Amino acid sequence: MQVNDGGTLEWNGDAYHRLSDVQFNVAMTLIDTLALKGDESLLDAGCGSGRITQVLLSRLPKGRVIGADLSQSMLRTARRECIAKPGQRVDFVVADLQTYVTPQPVDGIFSNMALHFVHDHAQMYRNFAACLQPEGFLALQFGHSQLHGELRDNLMHLMNEPPFGPYLHASAFNFRGCDPHNTRLFLQQAGFVNIEVSSL
Image (cartoon, rainbow, N blue to C red; front, side):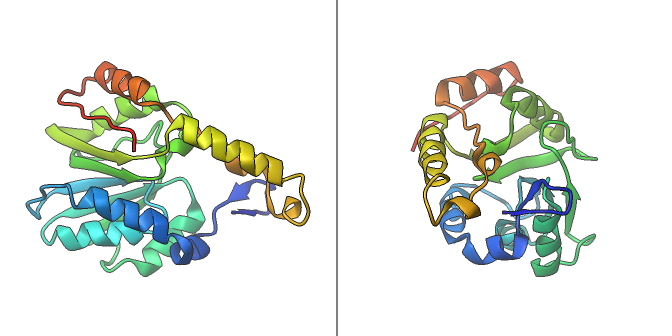
């Protein structure tokens, strides 16, 4: 992350694209569980730099993907790096997942290691329900609130330690996470059924 001209934190899409192997490997584990036919339409929620979007496209030779992210820098990298030309089988949109609804219903929503940055999970799941076809699916992986609390605490401690302090900014570690119980509850309240929630 870096501070932009407006003084707020912004992801560095190019750096993330190069340094996101852990996130990529976790995503591949989740993608491999999907029973895709190859013609589905998916929302890649919190698509980041598009590495996972590319994999989803390769699994959907007749399908489409909408990559949604709040970071302009991430989306610039995604548009540049994507194997498909934007507007053909993939579109990238700047979107807050608490308010974004796809223009047309999609068959599924995929998200990997992004939703722990979303503040209001209950609202996000209601929006996800509005984005999906009646038999649509969610495949989501994100940080558990307890894990991210521990990570945040450790990073906040490092902020006061030379030489790390100048490179760390408190708001970069505002992970929300969500525990399995509340995740299940929010999904049920949004109308989802056949819910499987696990803590890894």
